[in-house]
Image 1 (cartoon, rainbow, N blue to C red):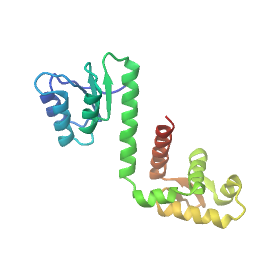
Image 2: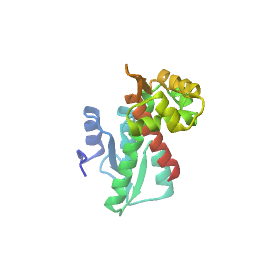
Image 3: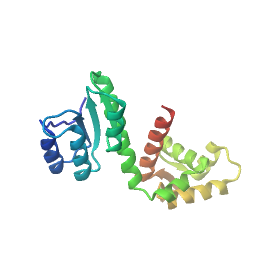
Length: 193
């Protein structure tokens, strides 16, 4: 599926590899030689807190699942499983990684307050679909009678570094604006699932 993978024969080896590498996700079996999956999970969280863990087990119980989640697993899959189930879990966990990365790069309080208004969210969506727009184009597209309202909202979005304005007076999304829209879409999909 295009993912770069690595493998470890034990929890100890997984910890050593994680300490020397940069992994987005670790797939751990609950029952492993030497260290258990739960013990390995605890150590991985200490040395690489950004690495997400998906726990896999043939001994699926509610207690095991709750314990794995409490110790920091992002997901829990019971054997036997279908490959598509695993791939869906991996995609979901990678979305979680991207969301967290996007949030940490932004001034969260100010950014979220600037997104609280539906007009500002609509401006961002417009700029995402059109790439670049001038003020009066946006006013017409948003169907707002008073263009000064749109100017106010554009100012808020510029101050939160979600949009910028070029010398030709056209507005466009910044990289941070693209990331926050991606995060909002992930959140929207998560909440509607």
